[in-house]
Length: 176
Ligand code: CO
Image 1 (cartoon, rainbow, N blue to C red):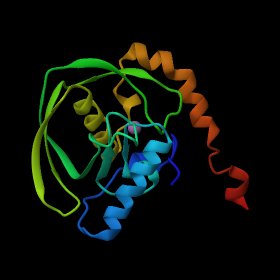
Image 2 (image 1 turned 45 degrees about the horizontal axis):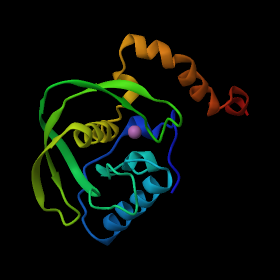
Image 3 (image 1 turned 30 degrees about the vertical axis):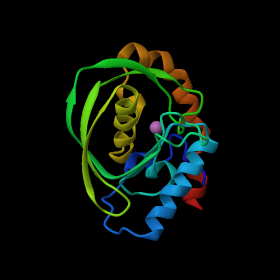
């Protein structure tokens, strides 16, 4: 699977609620994990592979040899957030771009597993940060939307480069 890079429009569309649980969903999650590992990431949301579903995967180690922290969350929602902390984030849809983002330190989430069972859980620190970043993807929100004005200014040139990299439909073609 290819990771959609900014400013791919699907990144702004986000995901829709998963209604159908079965082998297709499990296969999608498995493919997303493989894509995440081969891209050297620690988290990936379905819209980043062009699939508009509320599904995310992560593994804080980012290491396919250490899958103890590997997780798949279906239809995740944030129930509660506590504390605030800045930390550096990157995103597989923004290769080479890193910036400080403020996130809650602890979050409570509700989600379904691949069988559709509902769970509630409290997450903290790095794992909480990953999950907040990925849930944002499901809402069409990107980490660059959450930067301070100073950070925004710092990454502005790089963002503009990315925006120009994907050609918009040319006016000539539109007239043809
Ligand atoms: Co991301």
